[in-house]
Figure 1: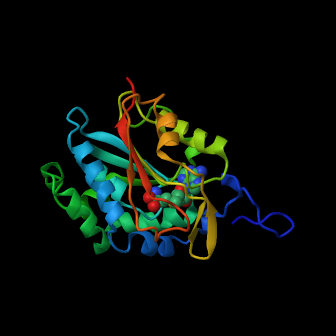
Figure 2 (figure 1 turned 120 degrees about the vertical axis):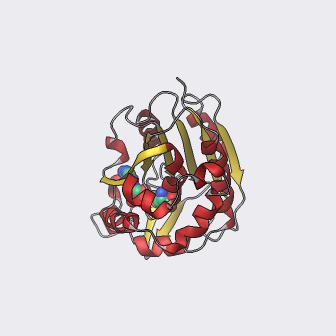
Figure 3 (figure 1 turned 45 degrees about the vertical axis):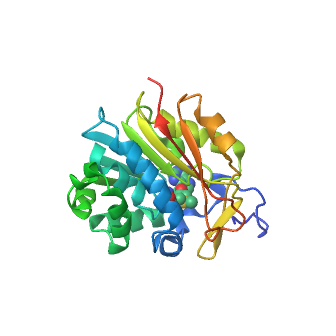
Length: 252
Ligand SMILES: C[S@@+](CC[C@H](N)C(=O)[O-])C[C@H]1O[C@@H](n2cnc3c(N)ncnc32)[C@H](O)[C@@H]1O
């Protein structure tokens, strides 16, 4: 966790207190995405079915915020998008992404195979080439996102996993939805009841989120949002109780 000026540890760090630029991308990637886990498969299936059913968004501009070392939200937007912005704050993760999107590792193949169980994804062709052409990595903070620029968006384990401040959590959600155009489809994932996590040797903060909190935060922007709990084997972080997926369309 972030050190304070006396060399101790901040108990409730805010986003700017954390050493994001030194995020251990490789360690986070191998721990979380080295293999396709059951909980990610369930999330991918739901997001896939949702995006595959969207008929009025195509050749779109997609946004994934806080991409970190996770390509599957961007892969899930491919059929809808002519370009996808990966908006990431950490220098280490930006460098990791710039390299990975150029020709992604075969470890992403099982994730893509789940997506291509739906025909809409098969029409993308080679996911490596498509992502290399369409993904643009941008170094920036969620708190500096411009308004109403993107047609579709994803944000996985970010608003809840970048701060221990409830105000910042709420602001992160409003910045993400504010960056999307009215009516935009979106998918957001949260860790359920997490209080923090490790990337390599470093600890990062999290906010406790449950289904009720996720629904209350999102309904003002998307009255028909669907929020669901995803069971987990509990091996990714200490103390969390599963994952939460929220998906829907912003009000017009
Ligand atoms: C728990 S990781 C999630 C990574 C990835 N989206 C995933 O699904 O595993 C949190 C991510 O948020 C990024 N992040 C931290 N502060 C941020 C900020 N202010 N704006 C945008 N991204 C930020 C971190 O660098 C990291 O990539």
